[in-house]
Length: 279
Image (cartoon, rainbow, N blue to C red):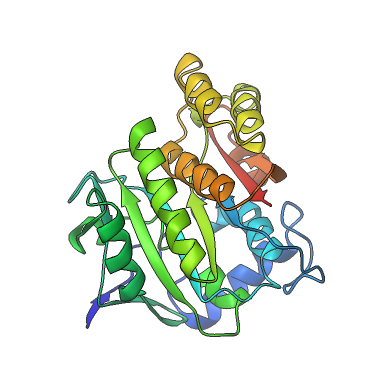
């Protein structure tokens, strides 16, 4: 079985087990985090979440809100969808017969689900190379390992093609897999990039409005009209589509902040982060 070794340990998050666990704990207790440690006390069914993927010192507290929200659940499968920042490999790629390694331990890819989703959509191809360098899925894994004590598998999907039509096909395919397995979906994306803080808040507020309404057509319209630089827009859209197919009636914004808000510095050029849950 192949091993996908960490690409950004020591950069986006600490590279040792103890330091990483401490960093995640701090994210949950941060003033922009949930302010408490998982698991949560509620057992409300959440179908999917949107979580950011920057370095933990910036986006980790916002991501912790999404993970706290699902921490009382026990999925057997976590489907993680994110953008291919490097543009390497296939347009849409999953993988099979592979282990993802983090400083906390190993997580197995659900080969059975990977084979099934490839049969549902031939656009979702098998390609380990597509996944080798990117951080968008990798940074989600330690958070998942910390909130879930039980054994679970992952189905990673990384996108070069983030078009409307691709998102529909991916979302519908993910929904079909989720009906077979007890699954949770994680859409990995940051929002506005490298704009002044107030402008980022304004831009992202308009886009998040379409997300919580589960309105994919309006989402792509706002994205294009306002030229919003959300890197994982296709991952967000795919997650929205899948969750709606699975019965979600709304999204809820749990927390939004920018890198400038969290670091309390450099508000001239920030990146936006949002935690959204679909139920």
